[in-house]
Length: 372
Image (cartoon, rainbow, N blue to C red; front, side, top):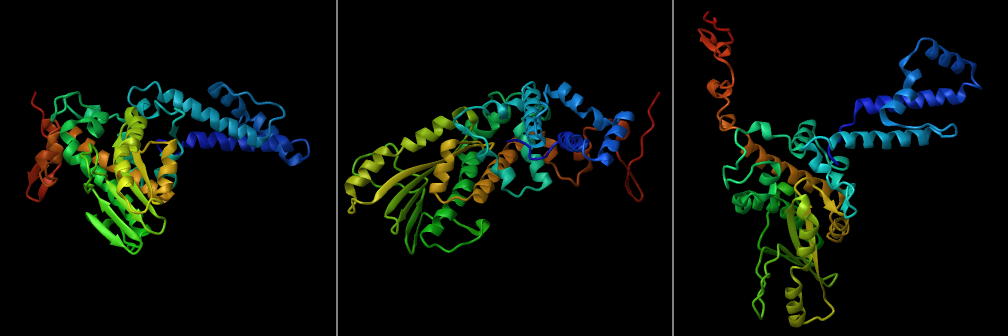
């Protein structure tokens, strides 16, 4: 979870330790390697102190009978522990990892956008930027300009009531579009690219039909009768109600549980009215946080929907990127959105003596004389 970039320091430590342990094991049987090891010791080479370095930095203890593989595994664990300990000291960076040890969360599944997705370096930088939450320096006000509550990344990501009906709905619909595309193929709808896929209120395929955001008529008034997606599959004799949610870490488990139980009354009504009593009706919640964090139950739910690891990674990436757009727009000062053609808009931060001047051949960066 978090950055997918590997630390060069960690890799260097692992490489040096592997080389030192390998040569040490062969020192007795190989005169060549024994000579190399002695040279390392005589010249006080960095590799000759690698064990001492790791013991001092990570508190590791190397046993005489420990194999190379075990030592490297222990090193990786110690490096991660050291990294997390440093992260917990930071007030904003630690939020992403606050519930890392929560038994209800699936950390491996929450990182599919890094392990199974295709992220460019620029995209990964944006993901890390918003997940770190260290963006408060960009804004001159601690109050949200929309609702006047305290402004931070978490507030802008999911908690601002003024963004609910536009920005959050747009992010929700981007997820629904991809889930709808996957489910549509199960009933015989033609396969198409995600960008070209359009959601319609109701579509009939060879093996069933799929409806989106459509009110279900019931005999009695129901509080919840408008699911995000309803899939009727004649081959499997099932009706699947899919409810999508993008929330935050504090509400993840409760939101998933609520969406699972939300349509129990509707299901009872449908069972009473359906002609085929053998038809199975089920509700599957598809919930994640804006950082892409999911519960352990989520993996089962999305596999029931037929969502592959690659599609899951794609959805996680889309959710984080859409959140990044929302946060950066409200965090950045207004002048950052002015035209790049306007030199004044791009240089308002500069002192007067650094301002560009216009010569006969166009703008030129010429320092202006400073008055005494």
